[in-house]
Amino acid sequence: MKKKLYFAVFAIFLLVVFAAGAFPSAKEIQARMLARLPEIKALKDKGLVGENNQGLLEFVGQQKEKQEIIRAENQDRTL
Image 1 (cartoon, rainbow, N blue to C red):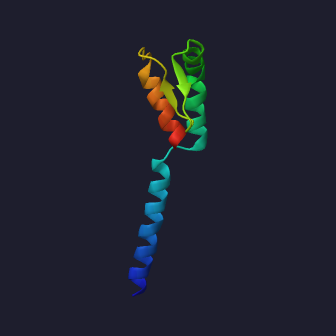
Image 2 (image 1 turned 60 degrees about the vertical axis):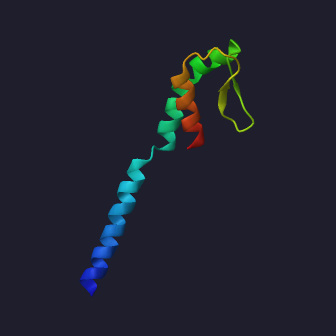
């Protein structure tokens, strides 16, 4: 009986440790967002990108420059 209990506790411990490593840390997210900031600011200054009422970036017109950067930024903003 004790053996099963120890195994269950160990299994839960491993699950928690590996699950915690699967998600990026706040510092990693912040670093990525800071790296993208100059490009996003340039797109905003051109009037190509704005923020919606949920705090996510959206293209304002038909011109969709650097879509991958906008997608990555929105993904980090929702984490």
